[in-house]
Length: 426
Image (cartoon, rainbow, N blue to C red; front, side, top):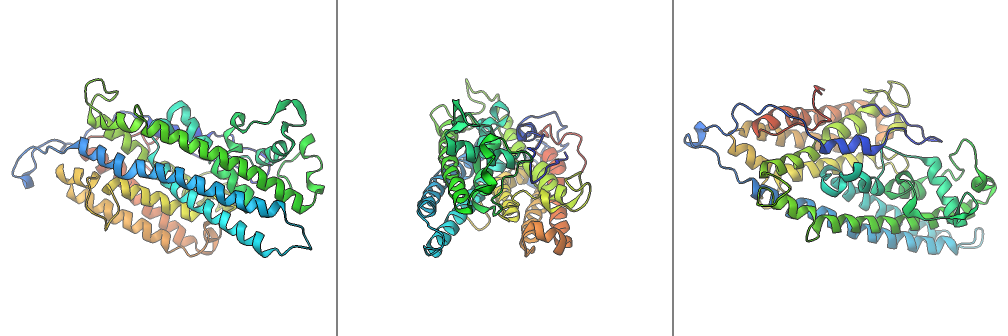
């Protein structure tokens, strides 16, 4: 799916909820001809893979720890940004030493990168509370690819004024604001962007004098809003944990799949839901994070290489996002990371179904894709030009994984393609 966006004034017309929630919907796919059949290499016996064990391991050892780590890191990010804001608010240009403020800002930026790295793993684990209500909670945490630089700048001014567009009858409340003015993407813009003029084509009343204010005043206003957005992010991360790990949370629903009273008729249905999330690697990593900037789909530059369309333009962290996505895919596929103690994963499922060759190909594919990303030496927005062949190579290696995912992997395990991938032969 093509995504057109600009870096100045207009929020993307395509909602992330419409793009990403589709990953949780399925359509029928034919089962592989060998599924459930006696495996000659297994003495002619019928495979009896324990899907419940797979689900329990992925939930307890991969998905839940990721959500917990994100919640903890979001709190650390809030602390780092609050510390930075204290220094920024008390800084006097031309009088005070800039070094402490600069150092504190770098700590806040590093904390954002750590937060983003964990979230990018969670992006490949979207299920349950993260896809309910058209991915409403997910979008509050991270709205991309729906973004609005103008909207963020407006809310900086609104928050500073305490009201919406100078209207005393509309007090500011971040909980009522749209997702493109909240979450991790907004924090990135506020911490990393060094153009302190607003991004709106036409300034409303709240922004009317913004560009004429001192840089220091604008830094303070941005910082104060970054702190507010970070508080909201902590709340949303805790909401995710509550909906996931609570007594009636989604984690237990998955682990109780197939049991009496379960919302899943079988363990296989629950397994299929987990694999739906893994297709993020296809529709988002391959197509949107790499394919769109490479010009393989329509983008902001037409059908040409377009640095403007990388995921994390301001921070230069787009490649880090992709690396984290691949790590998450590997964790889900293996049930852990290579080198860790062996756990039940989809690799074991494939072996049980007589598809060891598919397992080996996918493990090699994951390694090749990770290595291809590591070989890119500069930021993705720069590498698109200076290291274009390496970026193309990374795209091709991710495609190798997703080609297997959409074909042999799905067929051998008698799973279903998510709706977003049905009929997609790319």
